[in-house]
Length: 285
Image (tube, rainbow, N blue to C red; front, side, top):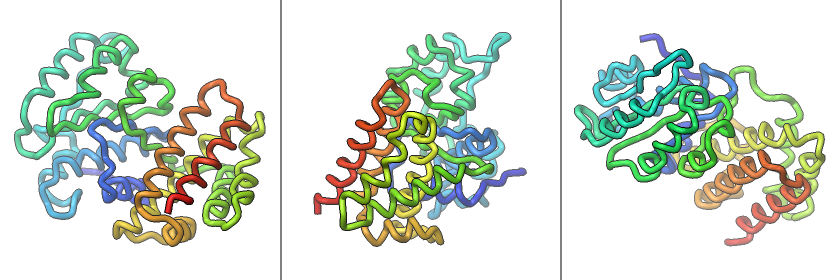
């Protein structure tokens, strides 16, 4: 078994797992193919591992999951010249989902590069199954851009956005740093000022990468409060200011803001709304 995962990706996923926020349907988004595949396999190992500290990455279950040979891990077959999941396969997925786990407590369905391999007609056919899956089922979709999936699918899933090995640009990192300083500041104006660069129309494409940096620090802060060590200064700063439930709310608001940014929305209105939502969370002490 040849498997490696970056510490950044691992820590981000552990923060989600330790918080107990993992939904039954997950979309893993990353520009980097290896990053999103590694994350999906890590979640797969977590789901089937039977040890106390999951995923242990040492037991037979983890090894079989990472090699995609575990009996409770299902990867649908691709058909046709376009190598996609057709309607017949979607019906087979439904039948497979009704089968109870064989060795693990959970059955995992992996859909690699779902933005390419699952056409809209098949996504529509899978909606009910995604929204109300049988017990002990985990659906994991990997995508380069979640916006390529139907909005009805996105709304029924938990989005986990990860940065690849190449990292992010300086603007996104610096702006995220300033937003974090604004969150922990005593003055509301500091947060709104930090978000102002993202209100500029020409910076709209930089909104999602900036929120990705912010989300990473929020998740690491949440993981730290749940016992996962981190050396990220921003995460440590946030963990001193925020409680677990406040971080969870901020993660939800941030994900919602990213989805809004992908529409034809006025960015000034969006950043003002985001600032007010963050402050509302902070005020609810």
